Image (cartoon, rainbow, N blue to C red; front, side, top):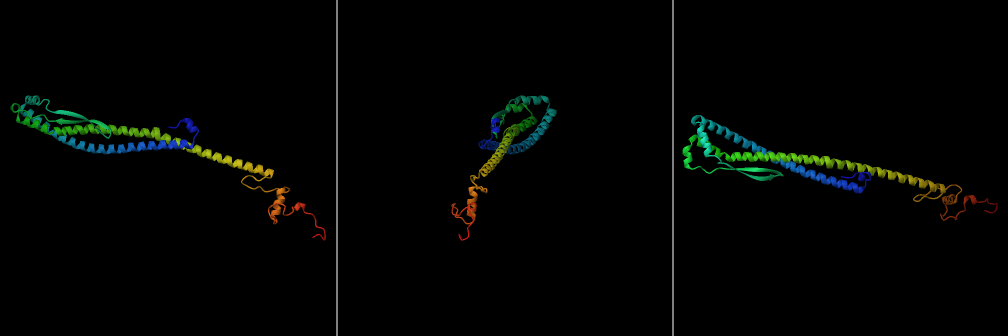
Length: 262
């Protein structure tokens, strides 16, 4: 940003520097705007996939609740507690950090547990086994939903950060630079008008001074006054003189011609 003393003494060099800074600021803003547009497209795609995954999770959740209530009503809560003890810690979540368009988030991957041995199957019921089997089959759906949810949240955060950066560049760089450039341009134009006015005044003063002395000002020709040597010379030229002075007598030196002297 231009300093105050630079604004008070504007120059064409300062104007070029300000315009270069403005060009860089506009280039940075354009890059951030392209990133913002890419983030919006990625966010729209991830949000659409998240809605689809949410629908699959809700359908699975409704089905699982129905089977759970069926087992509880037919076989009691003890069977459910026993089945949960047998399946405790059977799903493992693996988190890996990812980065998309500058947005960082943890990607979750859920792994199925190995199939239990036959002794466990004898301790549970057929309906509970069906419920647990449905849960195992939908582990990937749950993992996809969690992954997309974290991704969408990270993209929203990065989009807000990018918009703040664009706004900061506009407020702190682009707008002040535009104002500074306008001030420098106005100051330079005013200075040029002042210099032109001074040159015109000096030219008029020099022309008037030469005219009073009967001299020709540089770059022009002053008219001779009557009674000056130049007046007679100019008049001699006007009536057909050769322009070298002395070829014709001056009018004020002419004498009457006596009869017989013609």
